[in-house]
Image (cartoon, rainbow, N blue to C red):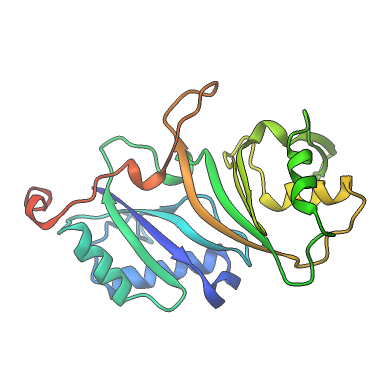
Length: 242
C-alpha cells in the first residue's frame, strides 16, 4: 500500500537541499522500523517520492512524501515512530493511506500557498501594501525569464489564484504545476521593478504553508491539500490493512 507523509521543514534545516532531505528520510525510515517496500534488482532502494522540492532557505508547513509499505498499523503510530527517528527541523504532521490507483505526490501538485515577509530594514518604502494591491490588480504581470535556449515573456497573473495582505505579511496561492510553476519571489521582484525599486539581496522570508492538488477543472479549479486525498487510519480500523 502507499502512504502519504506530511511534514514541516524549519529552522537550520531550511538550508539543506532536496537530495539531503531524501537521504535523511531513507535513514529515518530504517530507524523508525517502517516496513518499507524496496525495488527489485541488483541495487534495491526504498520506493519513495516527494512532491515539489522546496527551495533552499524556505521553511514549510506542508511538504509531502509518498512511501510504499508492506504493512501498516495506524496513522498515529507512524507519526510517533517517524518523529522519534527525526531531528530538530523536520516534524511529521500526518500520515494517511492513499486510495489504490491515486497519482503520486509530484504528479498531483497544482498549487502552493506561501507566506512572505520582508526582513527587518529590507522592505519597500512606506505604503508598499497599497501599491502591491494595485500591482496585483493589473490585467497582466509580465516578467522576462531567461532559459538556456532563449528569452521568454511570461504573464504571472493567470497563475496567481489568491492573495491576501495582512499588515507586513503577504499570502499567495499560486500555480505550482510542472507546466506553469511560479515562484513567490518572482511576483515580489516584478512588483519592485515596476515601482523602480531594487529588491535587496536575501530580503524575503518565505514559508510554504501547504501544497495543493486540483479536484476541479482547469476552468474552475478546486484546490485541496495533498493529504486530503488519503485517509487517516486509526487503531480501530487498521487491522484490515496488515
